[in-house]
Image: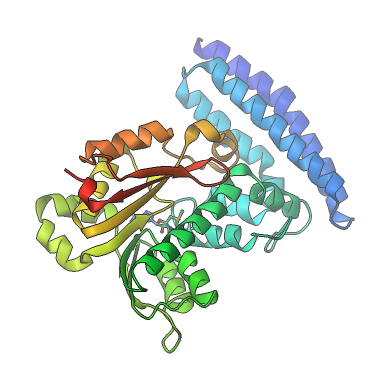
Length: 350
Ligand SMILES: C[S@@+](CC[C@H](N)C(=O)[O-])C[C@H]1O[C@@H](n2cnc3c(N)ncnc32)[C@H](O)[C@@H]1O
């Protein structure tokens, strides 16, 4: 498609589709302001966003990868048009503004976890923002993220039971380590657990300290490391002993929520480091979003939030690059089928 026809396709998209969406949002905003929470309004919000997502997707497909700069500008313009409404939503605004410099920080994740079991939970938004929060929280991906945390919690619990409560763990990109806070809250004795939480974000680690690292409780021995795992992995390539001294060797090394943002080249380095830090008979657990099972369009257009688009097979391909043999390995999905897990015993490595 020529630049001129791209411009005209985008122009008509804004004149018709986006204008209609904004009119709808404006009307919903007015209604939302002077009524109690209404499931009818929620259906209207959900319907309007889902329709708009299809139109965004159709425009993107029609441009077929040509004139990417024009498309990038169009997405930015789109966000500006919906801003008066979407900025009323805690989740939509935070996703777009990225106060930590990247989407999906621990505050967003905690907000998603806090919505578990409560329909239409919205932490702080009002008016149309409440409906948009609810739309975000009830999306397939947000539900899958809650399931992911629960899968990890059960996995750890099984490991603890199998090892008589003694476990040394490295949690890479730990965020607030919510799964550990829940284990502790459920009365699981973690006194013989040695837990290292590694994250870039000091605030996330402070949250770990508060929820998991309380002295005098049945909590684990906790070690907080504010580090960039990509830099550590590059260092591991040159000087494995130095990194091993810093991170130690562990019975379980896991990471959930980070690898969807890391390109293959760096991911291979991280996985290589991880596999070198697993003890004999230790395990590694990795989670990836499977792009065949969710639609990233809404996140991209409304919040400028992108993931490295990998299918389950793509993720397995990266893992195999580091020499994982796959015997005694297990691949499984969380209940919504959106996030895939890979579990390996350390004798699976070549
Ligand atoms: C989506 S959150 C997942 C947090 C947690 N694992 C969970 O599932 O709730 C991703 C986390 O990765 C951290 N992170 C992002 N880039 C990182 C890097 N290069 N090194 C270490 N941590 C990083 C962020 O600070 C954030 O806490």
